[in-house]
Image (cartoon, rainbow, N blue to C red; front, side):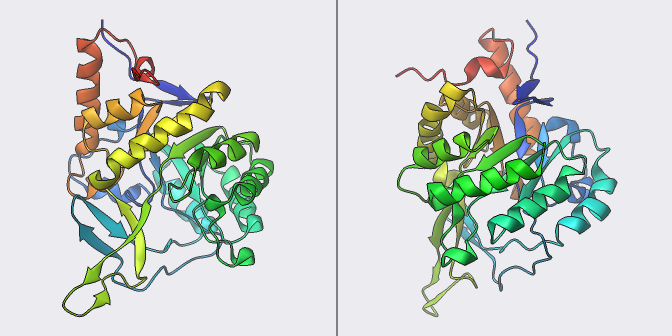
Length: 308
């Protein structure tokens, strides 16, 4: 039996369950300059995090390599939502994959306005980055407080008819509390997890390596912790039939299968792209082989099948 890799997440149909994560593939057009990159090998590409107005981002250095991973402190450098919709999306929307906007803001109102701009665009869905600091609440990240996270999702839900994905932060005491809040507020999907906060120090100079001092840790180093968080999120998402896009150190078909077993309906690849830009094709081929050897007709047969 030849399996089909097509999956449908909250009404959004993808050719396969593999997404390229926000910030790791630019706005998609950068991938056209990679010899041999096959856009049909990915179900969707999450666009770089976009704010209402252009942002220059954090001071350099912005990236630091770590054992089995990397730290990044880009600071959401982007040209602003209107430029993305008017100038970038027209150049890429005919490529053979789906595109998902990733929106960020410093106030609830800004999130809603960015969502309204993307509502009138060809993106298939909108992913909400709730790890941003709330400037009206002393810089506390929206995603670290259930009430603030809910307000963001509610505002975005009212601003767009697109399917919504809420990207959960692992930097919380109990991720399930935040997941419940955003589900109740109208999100259609969840992505788990965003990066873990960390830092790197130059032992020669005695100074932080990153210009922003701290940054987000990603890559294989966070995979075990990310698997646990997806398993926890699935506990509260499954009763509501809310799909989860699992992510955190995925670099092989085995990694993808493990995330599906703990509850993911789709998976995201990010840091691995920096050392192997064509890795998506390898993962999809490996996933298909895995399904064939087990007589499964679709990746959905793996979701939440962890034996405990």
